[in-house]
Image (tube, each protein chain N blue to C red):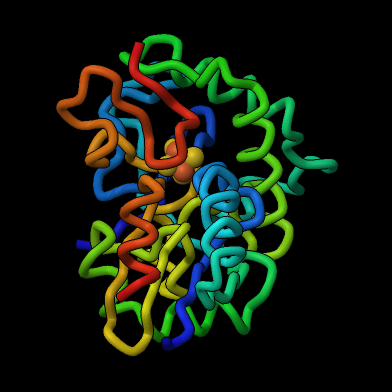
Amino acid sequence: MKKKFWRCFVCNDVHWGFKPPEICPTCKVAHAYVEISAKEAKACLGPLPEPGFTKADFRRAIEVFAAPNQFKVNPDTERVDLLLEGMFSNEQNHGLRYCPCRLRSKDFEEDLKIVCPCNFLIHETYQGLEKGECWCGLFIKR
Amino acid sequence: MSKHIMFHGRECPHCRAMMPLVDRLIAEGFAIEKLEVWHDEKNADLMRSYRPVIAAKCGGQLRVPTFLNPETSDAVCGEIPYEKLKEWASS
Ligand code: SF4
């Protein structure tokens, strides 16, 4: 099955996935999504804001992401700074914020799995361990 | 003794932690070549060319640091104790 683009006919939110959301997370209208083309999805996003996402923005984003979860951002700020440095230089040099502790294979689909944050819940350094952490130690179990 | 390779990433904390251990082995006379892979595509392509060998021993992925003996295909990755690294370097 391939992911498709969907657009909310009320608020124009765009969703990319196998199925549209039953309730639009933005305007809360039910059954509001219609399948659209990739071209329309891109056009609906409009001009992207410049400058992009800074390291401070990303740090804030991962704190918010971690807050309701069983893990937190590592309090070792030196480590986190180093990792962010790597991700942002990877974004500049290779297009996405790839994990600094792995190497992209050059297979796009495969490499999406190592864009930070990745699904580290399945890493052997995290799963089933009391003091688990993602492969790089950016996220650690609470 | 054949040349061993350490594939590492400049901004990888595991690689940073392992660097003093690698330097210690080099000072002891072991031939280990350090190849950075996120800022050097030639090194990255070389690491990719060993994917079947490395991935089999490193969780199905190309992880750094990876310590590889290209002759024997002996590979270990991540942060490992000095003794284990020396064992690899002696292989
Ligand atoms: S292992 Fe950690 S730092 Fe690396 S991509 Fe996954 S979440 Fe990010």
